Image (cartoon, rainbow, N blue to C red; front, side, top):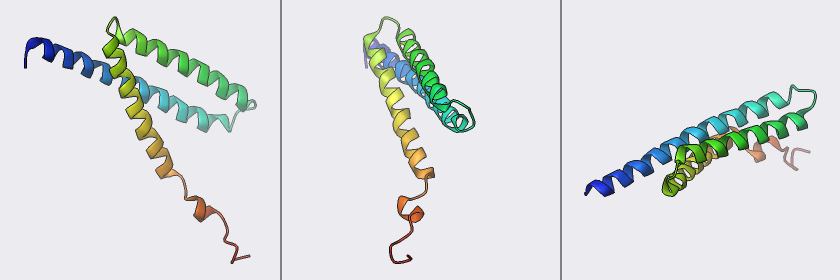
Length: 108
């Protein structure tokens, strides 16, 4: 592999790692928001405000970490989306099955 290819792969790996780190922070604060919203007096305002802050901070971090490298930004978005997919899978795995929580018609 030539030096240019190695540098390009390092740039992509840095971008993906940075995007994954931003994704972990984003989805960890989303989890915190959902758990905390049930205890607030104005949950809608809390959730909307948290979304705006999380979204703006995540977008700003992704762009800043990408620097002037558009492919690093693409890799960062890819890393963010991988963390999103893992987060969704973990959240679904921790939820009870819908069939288990519904009473059957035969039990009536």
